Image (cartoon, rainbow, N blue to C red; front, top):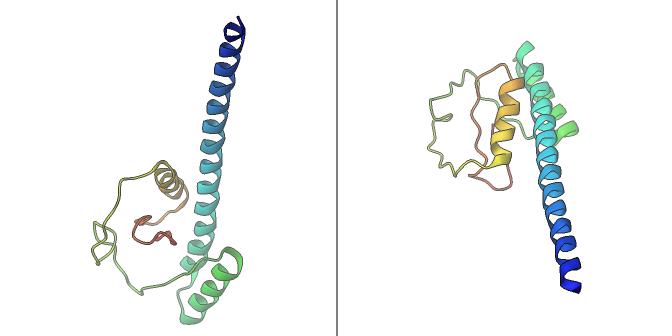
Length: 125
């Protein structure tokens, strides 16, 4: 008799928790990816106006001071089809990685490639 009452209650609670956490993590991932893409766009847009040595140094300091971004600049660098001239191994795309890439595509006006897997401590764009 007790199982007839408790089983549906437990099942409803488990399903509710799973749905809540799935939606919650989806929302958190989308917002974090959008904010990271916006921060990167600010740095790139500041660099687009002036590419002098002093401006690049100022932007590197700005990016580190406000966003903890490490910026490197290659003058007249060209993206290859794979993104860099060095071979990079890519792991299967995760939901967070795909969301971040989509956010960058929506905000950044320049060609880019991402590497989210070669260094677990860094996001390389």
